[in-house]
Every structure is written in structure tokens, then in C-alpha cells.
Image (cartoon, rainbow over the protein chains, first blue to last red):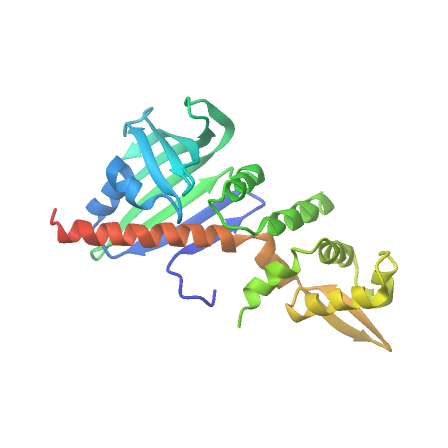
Length: 164
Length: 108
């Protein structure tokens, strides 16, 4: 890619897989904390202009994070992340779903596999999202987490139909 | 240069999307493409021009005819629809970088 983004983003539509990789100039300890502690997560999780608001986070296998992305108008989009596997400072997995404000999940969700690798004082984070559905991606666009580009999805729909 | 944005603008138009779907299965001349639409021929030509300018279509001269083909590389860029989601992650991770810097400053 020609831009100077530090985030590597690879989609594998056929296998419904998205891989996002980035190296942070920070020790593993801190990066792990930023991904697993409520107050730290809320400082970075929401894409602009949203604000992340975590109601609770219980970081253990079977535990959940229940959080909202709050729009500048105050609209809340709730999500649940259920932790399904934890290997401290190496990897954790979670099942991600949109939800209503009463914690009812909207299935299906997607499986997330988050890997942390320390390299000479920097930390590489590799997020693998599996079963990311077109519907979910559409919803992210509709809710405004991802700006515009609805046309992209319409075109994609048409192309997918054609190749069936 | 804002080629990327142009691509997304190009596919925002329903006629242009229909053209892309049409030529996806076979290369076609401007006339053949136009015959699929009720729109006036010059309007279709304009759409073809826009699609060609942003590299979604490729022109190929065969004999006296110009055929339009889908440019698979450019289409892939869109079909993967990497850009909006990559942007979201980039934005998110830029924030995380700031959080991590502050953590470092505060000591462990």
C-alpha cells in the first residue's frame, strides 16, 4: 500500500478471515494491559468520533466484556466480548457479538484470536478475526464505526451474487 | 492525487456498478454496453470514461473496436474493501500508541 499506515490489514474474503498486524514501540506488559484492562481499553478502542464505554470487564476464561460505542449524539451501540481462551501475555481469544443494552447478544458473532509477540522491546500484535460476516461488516458501516463506503458493500454484494 | 477516493466515488453510482457487473463476465464494446441501458449513449460513454480513469476498466483495441475489460487488480482492492476497515483499525491503533506512550511515562 502506498500510504504510510503502520497497520497491516489483510482480508481473506473466501475464508471470512481478517488479519490485522501492528508493531508497537512498547513493552509486552503494557500492550497486554491495554488490551485487557477496562480503563485502558476505553481510551483507545473506539474509532473517532466514538467513545468506548465499558460497563464491565471480567478478564478470565468464560468472563465477558460488555461495552458500548457512544456516538457524539449519545447513541450507544452495545457489544459483548466473551473470553474463550487466555494464555497470559501471549494470546487470548474471544467471541464478539453486537448486543442490545440488556446484554442480549445478536448472533452470529465473530471469533477473535489476538496474539502478542515481544521483539527487542517492541510488541507485535496480530489480530485474526474469523467468521467476520458481511452482515456484521455492513452493520459496522451502518452504525458509523466505519465511515461511508456503503457503495463498496453494494458492489461486493453484486459481485458475490454473480460468482455463486 | 486522490485516486483512491475517486474509485469509491466511481462505484457509488448505480449505473457504473451495473456496467462493472456487465463487463465482469466478458469484455464488451461501448456500444454493446450501452445497449443494456435506457440511458443515452453519451451518458454511458461518460460513465465508461470515469471507470477507465480510475482504472476499474481497461481498454483493449481489437481490430477497429475498443473493448472494455474489468481490471481485476483494482477490483480486488475494492472487493477486499480493505480501506474503510483498515482506516478504522489504524485510527484505533494510533490511539493505542498514545495510551502506551503515557503508560511508559507514568512508569510501570
